[in-house]
Image (cartoon, rainbow, N blue to C red):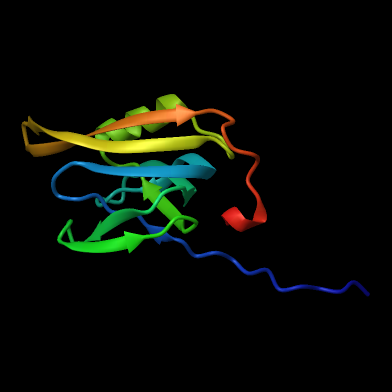
Length: 134
């Protein structure tokens, strides 16, 4: 009979954007799913999961509550913001890549204000994803 070991599933936390820029997030990619996330209206969007490379801040309650995020923590980013959605989809990150998301400005649009998020990627800049990353 085989010996079973309980699998500890990392929970991670969802990343939230500030109301105003600047804000930056650098992740070592654990997984990317083009249709794995949902936006605030339950519409499908990309989901990026990774390990935080540098301490940063996340925001909750529509950007009004600041949460400190330490390096090494597992974060989930629902890529629902248009510039983020298209940038991350174009980057097509893979496990072990380093991705930097930079909230740089706001743009006035028909229905209000849109966040402008630049996406940078360093392919294969990190060793493959290890057990410590998840």
